[in-house]
Image 1 (cartoon, helix red, strand yellow):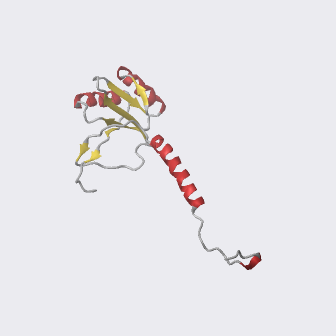
Image 2 (spheres, rainbow, N blue to C red):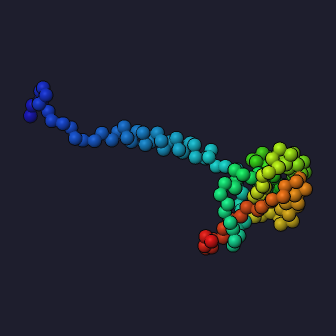
Image 3 (cartoon, rainbow, N blue to C red):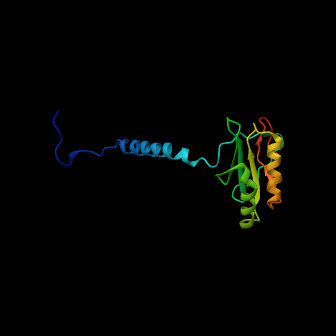
Length: 146
């Protein structure tokens, strides 16, 4: 039971997993910290639609307007993630149209909103000069991808 001295020992074929586990834990912590920051836009409960078409790169080629009603009944509007008072929406969209008239407008309206309120926003968007206004929906569950 003595120790072998000199170059008499063989190769150690055991895998040292400690550095691998350390790296995995560091990566896990990084992903846990960064993932909440990756969420884009405003959280909206979109209405469901039976016929919903997904266009590639919609949000990169369009101006996204998010609208939701707060618990106190106030309507909150976000244009490109920037909060805009509801009464200044038309002026803001007119200003944006002057800079980016070639873009389309996507309206993400919360499903709890009244149709008339969303329709007024669509009309104001048209009055600002945008010709193409679309509503963003989620595909109804159980519907096939056509």
